[in-house]
Amino acid sequence: MNNVKIIGVGSYAPERVVTNFELSEIVDTSDEWISSRTGIKERRITEGENTSSLAAKAALGAIKDAKIDPLELDLIILATTSPDSFTPSTACLVQAIIGADNATCFDIGAACSGFIYGLNVATQFIKTGAAKTVLVIGAEVLSKILDWEDRSTCVLFGDGAGAAILKRSETNGILSIFTGSDGKGAEFLECPAVSVKNPFVTKNHEKTEVISMNGKEVFRFAVKAMPTGIEEVLKDSPYTIDDIKYIVPHQANMRIIEHVAKKLNIDSSKFFINLDRYGNTSAATIPIALDEMSKAGLLESGDKIIIIGFGGGLTFGSALIEW
Ligand code: UT7
Image (tube, rainbow, N blue to C red; front, side, top):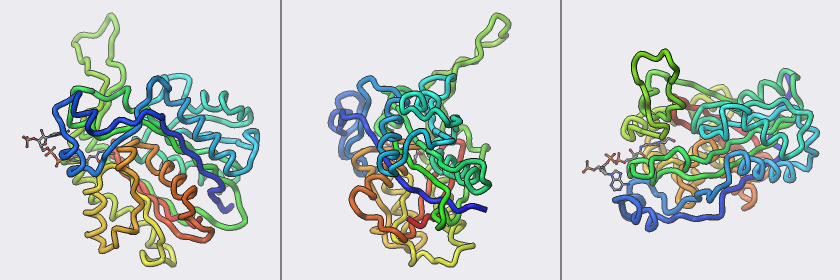
């Protein structure tokens, strides 16, 4: 089996910053409520750019960072809950923008765990020799599927994209990877697609195509799934949590992260946080964080980190990575 290494990362978020104060002019909320319940201060919201555009910009950043030619890519996997269209896949749209003519492209849907699911698929392709150089993207324009009158969801999310280039390598980078799903919890975090409509439909089942969430149930799931994910990737490795320099969690809620830190007795400074500036960008939170960490010089060659996510599906996943 081949080894797999992350050789470049990139990210992009729309320029428009929307603060909690601005949201309090749209819905009945306050900076105090949003900050104290979630840790979010502001998020980026698109003024028109769609998911493929954000994704392509993040991808070009990762390609530059990896110092590769787009023609070297033989696979593009794009994780999103907010694609441009049912077809073509957003991955194909990105392929055309970045000129990755030799790649096979597809989207995957695993909500906020999508980037880790994509990383897992990419890792298996490279390990088996089916691919050599893979672009994995997490990209979202969640603002287009939010109900801007629902204060329980619209304050939580943001738009953005992050990307990573994975390559067959002499040394091992993806040390272990774990994913899981629980479809019984599907109703706790939903965004319906187009309802069934045709001349033969006997009963109207129309649902509005916006995100709805049972926050308490998702919170409950998250504080169980995250410790499981961390333990799963460490258990067959020679490492303990003390060997891990950073945990890069899905950026949904500061209280979830603090809960997990306490439960596992991990110093909360080990968790990288940027949710105060981006909110929850679903599949994009982890690759955006990795890019910020890399650019800030926080990640050195040989560092061990754990990425960990959870979200709609319900889904969860984690990876132990040697940088
Ligand atoms: O990627 C996965 C994404 N999802 C998550 O990670 C969600 C996990 N869950 C959470 O983060 C939290 O459950 C929330 C932040 C969503 C909500 O926090 P909470 O402490 O569970 O609040 P709650 O839903 O119990 O609501 C408490 C109160 C309610 O009012 P009453 O019934 O006590 O009068 C809500 O109506 O807060 C009210 N509320 C708000 N008030 C001001 C709900 N949203 C807002 C708001 N501003 N934006």
